[in-house]
Length: 455
Ligand code: IMP
Image (cartoon, rainbow, N blue to C red; front, side):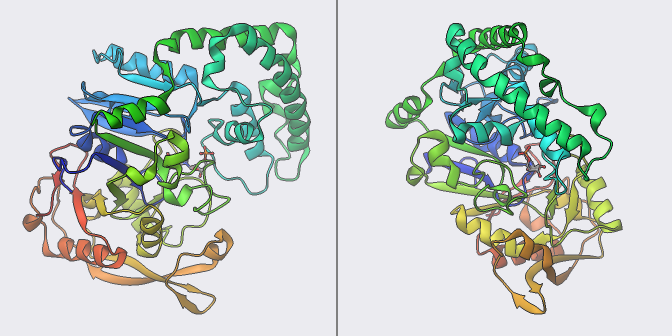
């Protein structure tokens, strides 16, 4: 991969693991050659970190490419939007002196995350014996209301206060009743005997009072007024931009293994976080994509619950976590760390139609005597090379490793493939061979310059 490759007018960057693959850096590099950068799934559960002129920016909703002054950032219909979070991110940019006037577009069809969604998210997690380990940002409940149709509210509806008030008068009492019932059950349930003290605001009955509903409507109508300059029919915008010859870069949030259809269900997020979500999440046909960059870490991480065959619950996992600063951008939770899983990545590369790999954080693995790659699974004594469709089967899979020599040299200063230790090159070659894709880019540190483009 070359950031300067001008041959693709329509590119998608997608994570091929469980998210946090450092996609932000790749999007940032590719944004130099694209005019429009689009988010099409997820919401404030995502966390993209970009180091820019000595500042570290953490975005949850804004497309990472927005830091480039020529880029228009689109938050498309498939995203679920928390208005205060978005306004705060815009404010951070203003404060850093980055002018975003006319450069952010928010779909009028995107769904709005309300405080009751966040309460519902936390409550569901507390009330189940098998929590997913969500980010608690209300993502699942908001998508649930979207597909359920009765209680979803879209961004466009924030622009009409009287209408919004009518909708909330219908929705809030229902939510309050439901959350109240669920909260008392969760508080007494076997999974959480001592949770009565942590009942969320929206389950106390109080919020369904007329005053509370009016306040909520007024607050969100005010957000609507503040966001109005950015709100657009982004489907039309994307098609026009494409017809005008603009270059489009789609930025997937999370990773393919968290995809609600194709990931390790139910330990997934609630959107299609592979390229499969691009078409529905933006209204732009995925068949126009000319290039899909699959981003992987040189190892694997996961936040939250769910099967993770190559997890290293030992000093090696701690070593990777420490060197890779593997703590969640959104929640600060320590990430689970493990070896590279070629079975999983071969599968996600296939469903995402990836053309090439961007291998991130290779520098983290320096200092190890030996590195390992999972090349197959042992499922109840049988060797399998395909990724199981059922998370409970995956839970029973034991990794079959191929072990390779490690390397001691630190890589942060390396800029050419030929200057990497031969063991590191051998490791990259083996990953490429096992996944079946060329390595177009290797990252050895967070800065732009710390990037190697194989010839
Ligand atoms: P939710 O998206 O907050 O509902 O969380 C569902 C699962 O996806 C949990 O395991 C989260 O830890 C995980 N998740 C959500 N967003 C991200 C992300 O941006 N990076 C990594 N994991 C994520």
